[in-house]
Length: 249
Length: 324
Image (cartoon, rainbow over all chains, first blue to last red; front, top):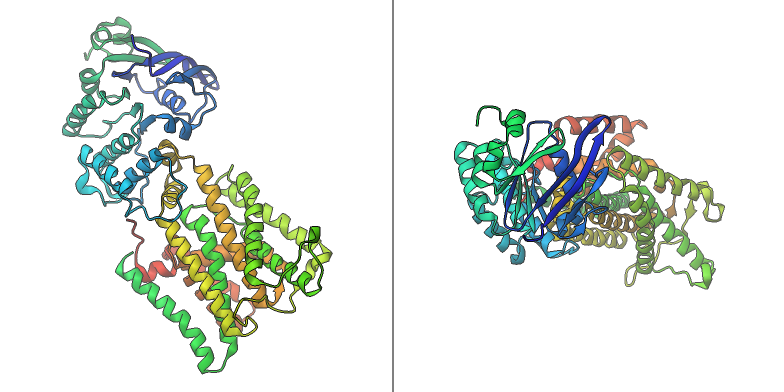
């Protein structure tokens, strides 16, 4: 089996008496979509924050491309190829959709200390950015400020920004949240193709999407991974059924 | 830029050029001094606007750099006049371009550690720590008798500028105006550049900036230092205008004044600081002529701006900000 791109070992994080992450081990292999599911309060967000570098773990290791991430901040991890989308859209609100993507292109080119040349006439930025908007189907809205985009369009823009970074892995935090059924279906199809470019760690509540996309599923409950396996394994797992899925599945 | 903002900018520049013309026609050289004061304050505020308007860094300590510029001008000129070498036997100078370069370099050297420490914090803490650094420099200047202490440092002559007689009001005004024009070009270039894009995203959403892999710290530090360099340049001109390097240039009131200029004129706008400086000096002159407590009325006006016209004067004239 191929080396995992992301390898989490025995990660622990407590907030006072609350063990938000309680010995989580998890990995993401090349070419796969690994879905992370769990009820509200299971510690999914805390785990994501630790992977991104915005919260330090109490103990345990996160290895990304074989490298220990301890001491590397959010910007550093993003620079190494950790592309993410946020649960709550996090964009430069005053900037147009195009400029949001251009920033990511600029970051990938590693060239933010250029003080004089105008970005708007710089085709090294605008061409790739437009191509990304085209891919997610936002071309027509390129010049609209992020603040004026609809909820669904902002989710698309988040994906376009993540794509423009050409990351080594995607970390998508509830990309379907708040999307209509049509939007979810389109995005599911889109993500299905995306796994060929980079593996995806997908945190998602939409079970249809998870079951359609995931190669493997991990179930997080009270900060612990209670099961990891294929979609079928998870559907059959008794512990998962009682803890999370209930009788609905 | 919208057509309306262009029109508003033309109006402001026209008003600014009208003042020296009026001074010549009415034979009122004092108007020229006022216009020069406007230009220099606008220059300092344009510098601050790189940090504050573009980067969202509310520095309450930019008087430190403004005052440093003033003291560099005063100290170098007084040494040159008295034929005293500076430290390590370096010769002093009266040449304004050289003094400006020294002031810019000194400001950069001082701003680098101040920024590096202050930018570890944000929000109110950033405001307070920049204030604290500026106060340290203020008290240092006040308690250093060699250069005037509390009394400040008078300059017998204005610094010399090649081919220009800086002692005359009009040529000196034109020098200041040219420097302001250069600073505005710099501001505009920075705003449209890759660096400017990162800086502005850092203001709008620092998490987004970090998530694409750009650390906000380095970007902000560079903006803080550039901004301090421009403020120091303004300080050199200000000391020359008054022929006096005053400790009040280093005071927290001065830092506040620079912020007020930007808020009055419209932050994040190219000509916001200039519009603010015109308004400020206009109030200072007219209201100040009526009552010593003119700043009370300035406070009322500021209150009005904060409540009803967040975009400042340019916001009223040019409509809402739009971003490409």
